[in-house]
Image (tube, rainbow, N blue to C red; front, side, top):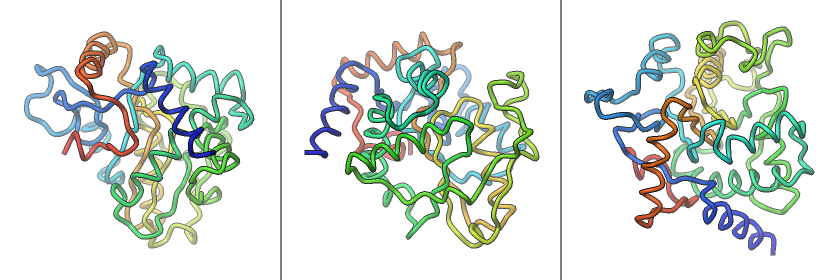
Length: 259
């Protein structure tokens, strides 16, 4: 019965175009963001990921976005509302819906994407931890959930939230993370986060984890924020893909679409 409820939630989100399938339209091989052909020029990474790699190195070995959004699309607006208006409360309906998506995707993709035995799953520390709340609700519903290493990394309390920083500052983060070296030493680590916009959180946390002895770090985000500048033409591509029969499914991941 619980499994049926999860499938029902996902089917509703897919039918109402809340979950978009990934597409390979000159898409970045790291963050999966579609790019305009004139900007691609044969490079594997988008400009944003190139800059992040220049600053943080290859600490973040790979990233798997589950779907796309902008802050204005239904999923992006829902995540923001869940965090800002509802305090990432596991009892809220949005926790159930986000939990269904995360649970289904991670259950299907863990062995394929990570390729590691017993990775350390680390939710990105947040003042309103949407991923943590969503997976807590998923567990309450009886759905598959990973074991989370909640104390492996924390944020320094005096460091401002990303959205409170100027947009040009958000990709560059220094001194924000405190990592428990005993927990991460020699481990393969997976960072879980709700949304990647600039990528600063994921890459800086990955660098801190690697500096503390992690063997390798990958990331999974519920949504890649394609940004307001690109939302109109990316939305048109996604609508066309869905109209041609593409649909989001937890069985499909980045490596199936964007090799």
